[in-house]
Length: 445
Image 1 (cartoon, one colour):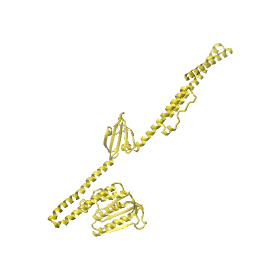
Image 2: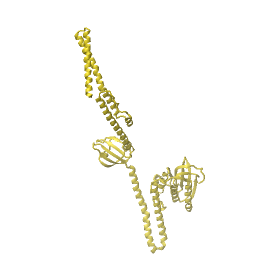
Image 3: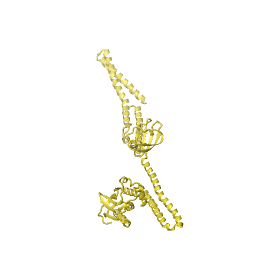
Image 4: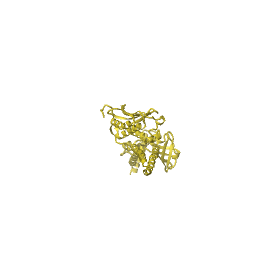
């Protein structure tokens, strides 16, 4: 039917052209024009009218097609974001304009364009979601072509391979890989490489530098702890065996062996307790409360006074009142106790002083002594676990080598820091600094 309609229009167009030509020819003859002139005018009029009608028929067919193609091009443009794809209307419905075939074609194309627009919107949403996931990953993800040229790298990968345009040679393989990069700084990486079907490479990279460092520290800690515990255990075993024989052979020596045995047991007990305290401090931080640091300092100063007087030492206090911090009272007491015990342990004459004051919104606790002091070369290492300036003397005095490490962990968990000043023959001065909640003036604690 639609073909018959188009045919009728074309036949009508031809009949109109022929009729117009005949009318012009008749008008020319009746006007007395020569026959060749009249025929020429008729042909010219028919040609002009035919051209006009042909153009109108062409526009009638091609105009709607151009409108549909323009709307489809706009609708399927991939340069717009998802929201605009969803909100933009599809190709206009042509109504009664143009041939029926063109209108049906426009309807089919409109449906196809709507489906494609929806699919493009879904693809854009999925692409955005994938990009968000990859950007939030702590592991690096890299896609490279067959030659190793990097096509995509998420932010984590860009941080692990800064400025790299190609994959390192170690990553151009398949399966798990471990490698070490030394520029711009040393990093230990663990990667999994996968070759895709089209020859491209997908690489997942994980930075294990910190994990390896912590693992090495744990190994060293276990080795050091085992070594430290082996000495008192061996001493206890030797003394116990000797004591067993002395009970029968030399009863008078039994008290002396018992004192040695008790001393080694106390030393082992202190070491175990320090290890437990250190493990606890390195784990989950304890719940914080409002702590009167004034009260903590005064209690610890009172605790050491009898022992200091027994050794002939003076304990000097200068404690500000009403100093309050956020923290754990047991841990703060533990840190201060370690510093005061060290001061008593190594000071043979003179005094041990403890001072508390507030400066620039921070509470400061100073523990100073008149002991032998610490060599300058050792100051940077005294907070390491099991580090001793004088190992023989430390064991003689019952030190475990963990006290200052515990002090550092406690202070750092309270968002503070510890400083030390010392000079051989002039004693040592330790200062703990933690944020204060309330300054002096809150009344006596």
